[in-house]
Length: 331
Ligand code: SF4
Image (tube, rainbow, N blue to C red; front, side, top):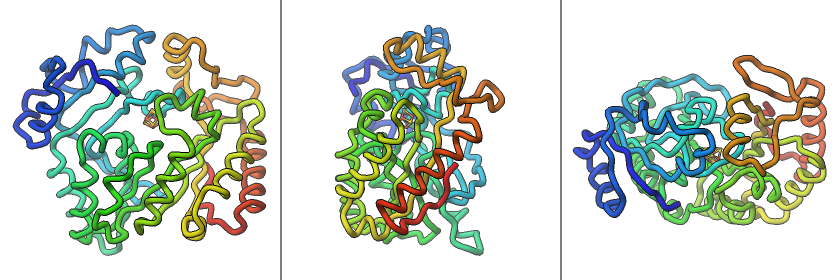
C-alpha cells in the first residue's frame, strides 16, 4: 500500500512510535488533526472515494481502553494498536463501526495498552485470553509498526495469560523467531481463492495464507483456522468443498493435528451496500434477498433455514475431509 497522506494528532509525535512513523513517511504530507475520530475532511468525502480514502494513514493516541467480554476463542476483546485496515473486503465488519472512515489508524501509546493488558491478566485468578485483533489486521499493521515484534515476547515474558489475533495476510516472517512461549494463538482466516479475488480486495491469496499458517505452526505457535466469513454465493457448496480439500492438501500434518476451526457466516448491512455500490460498482452484490433477512440496525444475515443448511453441510464436509478436527463454534 502506498499512502498518500498522513493525518496525525500532534501529541502522538512525543511517543517513540510516533517519531518512527514520522521518519518512515516523511516523504508524504502530514496534516494535523484534533482527533482521529473526527476528521471532517474525510467524513465529507463521497462513498465513491472509499478506495482512495484507504490510502490515507491516521496516527493518534488511543484514549478508550474498554474491554468487551467474549466467549469464543478469547475472554475479552481488547482495543489495541490499530483500527481499520488498508484492504477492502466488501463485507468488512469494521465498516459497521467506522462507515467509510475505516482506513488504517495507528495508535502510538502501545506501552500503555500493553501494560494495562498485563495488569488485567495478572489480576485474574484464572488464565485469560485476550483478543487483540478485533479492530484491525495486526499482521498488516505490523509491516508498518513492528508492534507484534514488540508485543509478543514482552507479553510472553510477563506471564499474564494468552493473546490471540486473526489475519488475512501472510507477512509472518518477522514473527517466526520470536520468544512467544506459546502465549500467542495465531488464527488464519481463509476463504476460497475465487472469493478472495473478487471480494477480499487487497488481502493475501489463499496459498500464501496456507504457507503462513504452516510456518507459524512450525515455529511453535498454537494455531487455528477461521473459515470466515462463509458467503453463500452461487455455487458455494463446490467452492467450500474445494477450499477444504485445498487446505487438506496444503496444511502440514503438524498443523492439521493441532488446529481448531472457527466458522462464521457472513453478515452484511445497508451501509456496505451503499458504499460498495458507489465505490466498487462492478463488484458482486453480496446482498441476496432470497437468502437474507434483517437483523436490526440495517444489518442482514442469512435466514435460519439457510444457515442451518450451510452449517450441516460444512460440518459434514469437515468430518469427511479432516475427520475429528475440532470446530470451536459456527456462528
Ligand atoms: S482484512 Fe479484515 S479488517 Fe481488513 S478490510 Fe478485510 S475484513 Fe476488514
